[in-house]
Length: 140
Image (tube, rainbow, N blue to C red; front, side):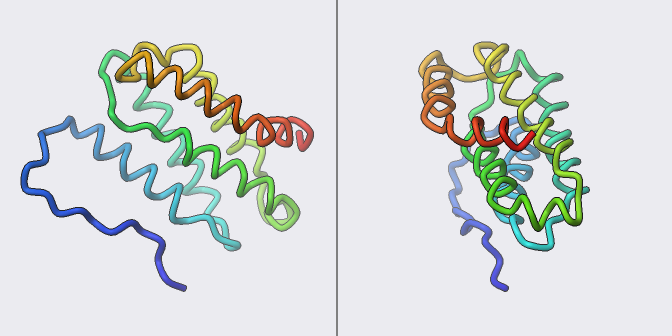
């Protein structure tokens, strides 16, 4: 099965960024590229916990990394593969962690999103993808 990693962009003029940005990029890359039938639940739990902890500790720092779409895609994957995943894993703790991240985005997003426009885009994306959250509510 081919890997779904994005092609690495080689740019010599990359501005320096805090190490936390690279870790967040890595977590988003993992979320996007490891949605498969043999779901690595433990790794996903750790990945989402790392994102949560980094955002809690780094709330004052502005991050250019915006991973709302990756988290929504993870929830969509959990919902669309609910039957097969529930046979092997308890997916509810992972879904709860993702929902808690969205709660943190909504509550504290203005402190770590780079602009007020980013905050507005977050709300727009949540409203636009409301069906995912409605389905998650029905699943629970």
